[in-house]
Amino acid sequence: MKEKLRIAIDGPSGAGKSTIARQVAGALGIDYIDTGAMYRAVGYKALREQIPLEDREALGAMLSATEIDFSGGNTLLDGEVINDKIRTPEVSKMASDISALPEVREKLVALQRQMGSSKSVVMDGRDIGTNVLRDAEYKFFLTASAEERARRRWLELLEKGETVSLEEVQADIAARDHNDSSRPLNPLRRAPDALEIDSSHMSIEQVTAFILRRVCPEQH
Ligand code: DC
Image (cartoon, rainbow, N blue to C red; front, side):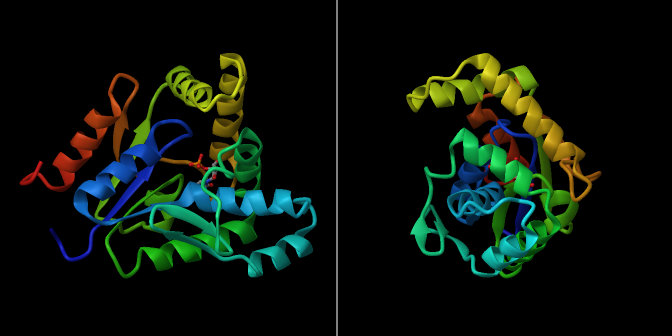
């Protein structure tokens, strides 16, 4: 393998990015950085501390007193493991809203660049190929139809024991798609040099295998 390998995987909510990115990183023995979890962590903290998004001063103070890290497969917020706490619909919505604010993006993008500067990584998000790691060696843009993404997210929530209707999940996905692609700052976009994969009719394993064949044809 090359000395430093950075793989960017972008795409809308529910396209399977994080599962696939984690599998690709595992197969290559390199780190996985879930940038969505970082926006979720900040959103979760703002909710917990009841900071309204309009209160930019309080938000700024909160951001400067916030540490986010990944360790042993866990997401850490100020040293506390927050893996499941940031996966609720309430935090999803807040993460999407808070991710549009310049001060939030500035802080998290700097942290993400730092994480990807010294080692090989697989990083997934919305603006990795277009902004965070513009010079990544490999870029993928993972999509699936809105219906399929809603169906997958709904099944995931049912498995977790949450009672939510498919229509609600569809509406939530449509709102987040709109939010994430219409914000002025680093919206969700395919980088011109990213390879688009439509996973509507592919399994997670098929997409992972496809990416691995591209990155390491000699081994996969
Ligand atoms: O990938 P996710 O659903 O966990 O991301 C949560 C939110 O964070 C998503 O609605 C948009 C935002 N996000 C972003 O703006 N930029 C990224 N690189 C990753 C996520």
